[in-house]
Length: 329
Image (tube, rainbow, N blue to C red; front, side, top):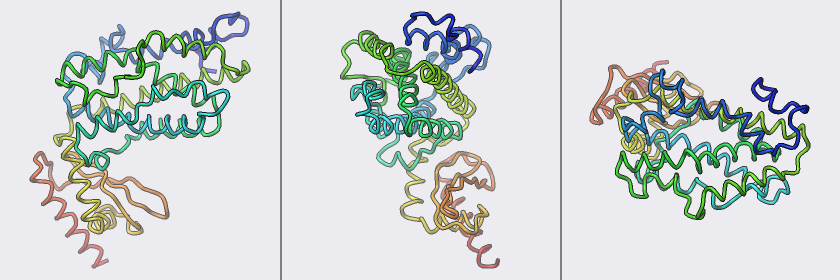
């Protein structure tokens, strides 16, 4: 059991305290670690949350943050669909909480209709999603832990994120629909009902302890994802909309050329198919299908790029050189 849960969940000290209170107490330090207003955060380089609140987070980096959340909620809501009729997890599956449709609408607004071609999970996000898929495959507590961590956070601090996004970028609804819960009249009352269901959940003590530990892991994964995003703040000169448009064009109109680049410049001679997943000023990212498994790879540009007009000639160069290399191999 993680050290910071030991005291609050020691059988000698749990008494009759509500289960929801035990979860909040055990996860408080993790919550504070994600809070940009926490004292220790004031000494750090401003991260995603801090920059959103002080107005220095670009709309492009906001969009990239939104895109990573898409993968997390896709996993959680797929698990929710599986557990909707489950006697333990089912009471925590609420249509009013579903975020995926709102995220998709926001990304279409922010990136255009080809948005799906321009987003790919960060390694930290992929690890987060893998964890959700693993523990929520057949364990009701796994779904409850991850749903609780995300949705109650959205109804709490997430509301401040939505207000900051609307203030900074001039959004009305589109662009920040993710933070609007149209079916919930009172977030406070809803959270009270949610916590009452946690207190009444039919789980033995060992499963409750396991669920609390999973909440802590959910916080850790969320923190790692935010850290991965923070590491790339301001570093990509190309707007997400541009990335999506070019990736879509390569993957739909030039799929064979994309494969040649991955086989040649990418070094994946055995690749069966490939897709372009993104790019920045330093290089392009691809996913090549090799022996039935997608392998991520990166191909660097010959020189740093900063303008959209520079991308096409560089891709043509990569294709030409890759084709020649494969023919002469």
